[in-house]
Length: 207
Image (cartoon, rainbow, N blue to C red; front, side):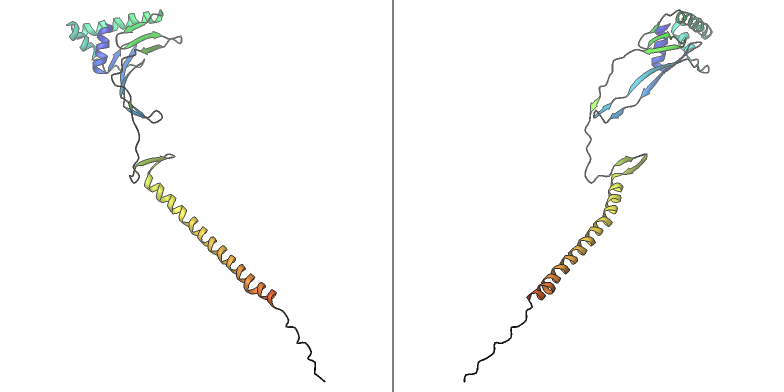
């Protein structure tokens, strides 16, 4: 029965076992690993939950087809098999499903599942991110998505008032410097250069 269940799960991606729980195949899409500069390929992960969807009972049809029995007989066999498996789990035994994994009872009396390690068909691909100088691309700032061009425009707008302030300050300092130099050379230096003309010596009149 385990082999038929494994085969059914691999084909339909889900399998519901009355009284036990449900197997489901969850597809994990490819992802970008920025830290290691690689693309992780898509993969499939088998999970098990004790929740049961009773509306989906296509396993009985599959068992009936494979064993060439009626659907009612197949449904009865599945229920009896699930009861036996529950008893084995409660006794501490492990139930192996080929290419799927192992069911066992945890210390908290819950059914736990250990998926089987399967061979990975595709290996991670190394990537190198290239950012063109003038190309516009999306960037994440906090929890908001914007573009690199919008960020550059905002930064340049903030820098313009700062540059104008520096220019004004430089002009003021230049004018102050020129004023000081002008005062020194044409004011202070001129005063220091002034002197009283010496009085002409008395002339002697020849007798």
